[in-house]
Image 1 (cartoon, one colour):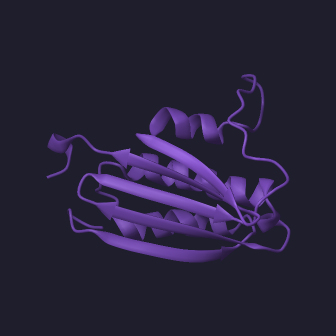
Image 2 (image 1 turned 180 degrees about the vertical axis):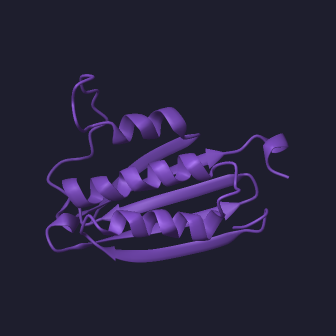
Image 3 (image 1 turned 45 degrees about the vertical axis):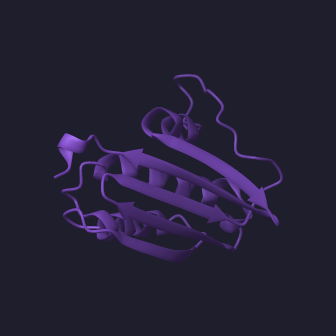
Amino acid sequence: MRNGRGRDVLVRFPGVPSQVSRVRRLVTAALGRDHPLYDDCVLLASELATNAILHSRSGAGGWFTVAVRASGAMVRVWVADAGSDGPPCACRNGSRATGGRGLPLLEALSHRWGLSRANGATTVWFELAAKAAAWR
């Protein structure tokens, strides 16, 4: 989406770390850098892509899918991966931990978020909502 016009994108990525930068470019293409939710959306999409690669079977030769739907002052992003043995953990790690901040960031920055597990896959999604005055 650029300048208030909606645009949906859906891309499948190989489960390798170099694809996180492609996810950021996908968000840029969908929103444009001038969108008021751009920074938070890029950060959260990057975190979910990284989680898909590091914590699911996507990172063991699999794939993950990212979708961005932008409409008016709302953006919804979902990342579907190849699943893992357990559900994602929104655990709180100590201040010196080098990981484990993705889902707590999602919880802090998003308007709403959730996850589903079906047929061996995990999908994590989030929505960001801009204040009406900020996006005109």
